[in-house]
Length: 185
Image (tube, rainbow, N blue to C red; front, side):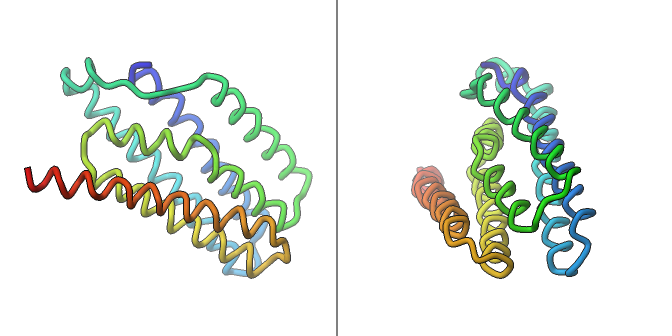
């Protein structure tokens, strides 16, 4: 599917994730560490939106990128993510525990949306941009893992969060050797 077709959908989903995290800021104003965590998660989603808007501008102004750029995209994933975000927002309005909110965050951070953002950043053909996006995701997952460990006793949830960190780290390590070879060429 052409990049321009995917960007609008990805932006919409990122906004919805950001809105959920903002709602969690309001749902958990105390302790301050928890409120700040949710605010940081929302801010990072805003950063994803900004990066996608930049990709959109580059694609609009560069005919070569517009013509050749393709990104793998499954409409079933979009449908599932929209339904998940809608259900989570409804659940949040009814009241959730901090543990459940953290579980929602692990689910969202493990979603295909994060991979789609990295793929879309690849359209600008910059390993540095891609690496930075993955590093931010690793940072987010580290914060999320810490919050799960600190505020829950849920070992399964902690294992899921830690596995996501390792998965993202692995993706970063695999990408770096290509970048090093490209510099030497």
